[in-house]
Image 1: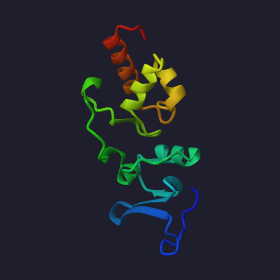
Image 2 (image 1 turned 90 degrees about the horizontal axis):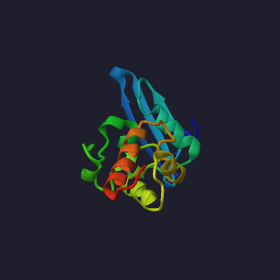
Image 3 (image 1 turned 180 degrees about the horizontal axis):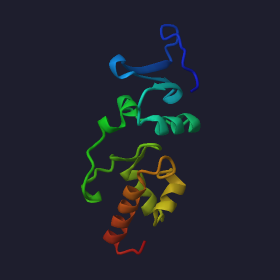
Length: 150
C-alpha cells in the first residue's frame, strides 16, 4: 500500500523499517515520513495487517515502538495489568489510535462516563476493537472509585 519504493540514501526525511525471514516466507516493510505511515509491504502471515491498514488510511501518528508495529505481540509496551489501578497513565490501551490510560482518565474527568463517550474524544475502540474491553474496564473502575454510575 502507498509509497513502497524510496531512495533511502537520497530521502533523509523517510524512515524505512523492514524485516525478512526467507525460510518462513515473510517480508515486512514500513515507509514512514513525518511520523506517519506512507507505505507498507506485508508478505506472509502477519497479525499487523489490520492495524497498519488503519494507520495508513487515517494518516494517524505512529507510536515510537516501530518493531511493535511489525510484531504486535512483541511490543515493548508495559505489560498488561490485572487491574486499572496497577496500570501507569502512560500505558497504551488502544494500539490502533495510540490512546493511553491517562488520556482515558482525562476524558472521564471531563465527563465521558462510558466507552462510547471516550471513543468520541480519543477514537479508542474505533480501530480493530480489541481494546474495547480494556477501555470499558478503565471507565468502570474510575466510576467505582468516585461512586459514579456508568
